[in-house]
Amino acid sequence: QQQVKQSPQSLIVQKGGIPIINCAYENTAFDYFPWYQQFPGKGPALLIAIRPDVSEKKEGRFTISFNKSAKQFSLHIMDSQPGDSATYFCAASEGYQKVTFGTGTKLQVIP
Amino acid sequence: DGGITQSPKYLFRKEGQNVTLSCEQNLNHDAMYWYRQDPGQGLRLIYYSQIVNDFQKGDIAEGYSVSREKKESFPLTVTSAQKNPTAFYLCASSPRQGTNEQFFGPGTRLTVL
Image (cartoon, rainbow over the protein chains, first blue to last red):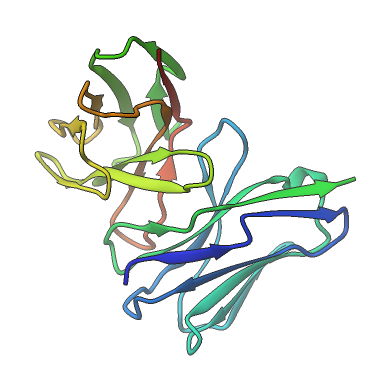
């Protein structure tokens, strides 16, 4: 019930491509869905987040698409750059309860 | 500068020794968390504390202990009972108001020889 399933585990795209990372959840009480970006040897940092009352949120080249009925959400990176190479984690939480993280997607953007 | 500090960045210990990882925050956040990160397994919650002098076990608490005597500090002790302690340890905090954003420290890489 508390799991967040993330796919794919790894992803390689050419510069300018649009990598898409998908997550699925079961707990319908979740009300906050963030994405974190982590560079090697560093702590994760919040990239973008969405509430379940909207279907899409865009910040710069990063977009979250949210499908409440399917209990799925995804991260799209437009015009990807080599500097976007990192590990991306989706997550979900209910109120101020503990956060449940996906298993991560390692993205490599090739010049 | 506000933020979360973890020390040391790298830590080496012999098998059978207890070791304590430091986590300090000056963000005035109520909640603090410890995660363990292993390749391909994401972030697994060890312990968390939502208020001073109170903490709860996470998903993988066996072999670990914590204390929360001050709002700013949440040290993690890796005991000799932890069977596979070599990992990257991340501390985080959150304000428990507004969004539930987690603010992470830079991490401590523990290697047990």
